[in-house]
Length: 306
Ligand SMILES: Nc1ncnc2c1ncn2[C@@H]1O[C@H](COP(=O)(O)OP(=O)(O)OP(=O)(O)O)[C@@H](O)[C@H]1O
Ligand SMILES: [Mg+2]
Picture 1 (cartoon, rainbow, N blue to C red):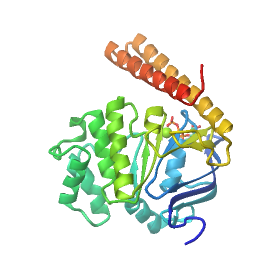
Picture 2: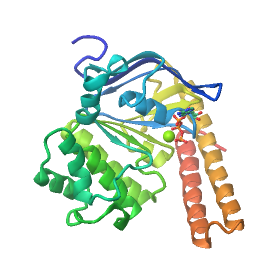
Picture 3: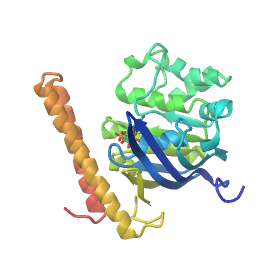
Picture 4: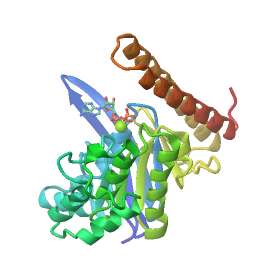
């Protein structure tokens, strides 16, 4: 197959537009986004809250449909598919690690992994156990999700996404509210899937430390792709010149900082209203402080000061 959706490209997104209609209001979530991801590559999508990251992942995974544009994943035209064909695509070709990880609370860790396998007609206990070991949860197969830590639950969600050995893995803020060491561990599991097993990984994050571990970073703001750069150096890979990419990254980083400060103020308000304890507030302080430092460091690394 030549051109669009060629052998070496696992994901091709072309001119995708997504508009939500909500109570008479039209929200343009994606404005003609085009990008591609090579087989075996890890692409991080970075952008502030509401920029369209989850919408883009949903469209790649065939969970949501674009209003315009084409999406080809693993040679399959997702944007025009439907019915049983689309259902099998979602079950077998894409592993989705959701932002709010969707573990089933009444199933054990192992059963959570066996469920998507059973739906695809190939439940395999041994493979389930091997997946648990791969994400560092060996021996915890009989635990229920609530008996696992936040980081362990997130790793279980990754194992569930890998259950049917999909060539494409999409992960929506897989490191979410986790501390950086735990977050790094999850990203390393995803990197290994890509670099040692030839899987293609598309993940979203607002954390520059996570983005830096990816092969390339796509920066999205207000539903627009601002540029794609390789973490080691700014490179305009989507027709953006270096200066434009640099400016786009700076703008996005600043908005990510604003988001973090807002989360902190919300936490303070909740503390004042007695809805959360001092421990939760201190934890938010620590996370926001770390994120602030990471963003500052990233800005200075990119040669942007102030
Ligand atoms: N089902 C929906 N109905 C209406 N508007 C929606 C819907 N889903 C998302 N949106 C809007 O589309 C825009 C993009 O949302 P999206 O969830 O993709 O952002 P995001 O970058 O993932 O944000 P976050 O970092 O907070 O997860 C936002 O303005 C959001 O309010
Ligand atoms: Mg999101």
